[in-house]
Length: 164
Image (cartoon, rainbow, N blue to C red):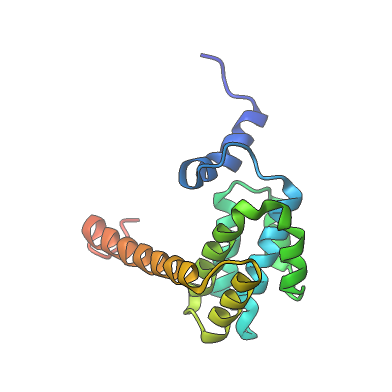
């Protein structure tokens, strides 16, 4: 069997999670990814504070998706002061990803507790995208259920203690 090329390895890193978890059939264009991550940071800054836990979650998510060191540095240092509606307008070509953006934003926001101002902003943006409060509430419930499932998995597999 032939060895994987550096490009193939990078492609696997960058797209494995999105294919497995989200059903993506092709890579996300880098310009879209950059705007998407800006939006995540702006959502997390919705309560006026972009906490270290929120930023860490977002940087970690970018790493999980196999983004470059340069991209991770960008996410780590981005000021999160853009207008969320301008970013959403830039992402308008990616309408199929709107619910995923809200989901990822809620995940990022919950890293330090899902604050009322963050929740309010997410619901407001969802309305402008034509996504009902009911759908946003379903996404919020999904995030809550996943957090509980992860806690249960840690308890069952490792008795809530880090094995390493």
